[in-house]
Image (cartoon, rainbow, N blue to C red; front, side, top):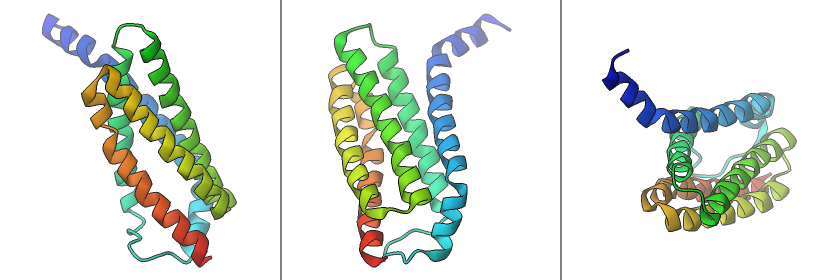
Length: 163
């Protein structure tokens, strides 16, 4: 490999790793909820504005990539308490995201899932604020995620009320 290729790989390696890790977590979450999603699609009454099922993996793939890029930008910052806090909040919100998915699709306890998604929204907002102390672009990359989860909260509470 030439010097230019090595420089390219070295420069983008944290971003590639960040995206791959977050996408892998999303893929594991999707795999763990496959049966629940199938049951959800067939049995649950859905509210107006519910997108077609094929939209969700596309949107989540994009959002996970943005998350991966954002967290890589934070990871590349010099070690500090703010960086450690941002990475912790990132990990926590990602774990809560997976928990919500399991509770919503596998358990189909939509009321509990709504409480969890409110926690997730708060954590995403906290993550955006925390990221913004270190890297404005990393923070801005999380805004579509916040908006999508806000929309998911509408779907969640509507599904709870309809079912």
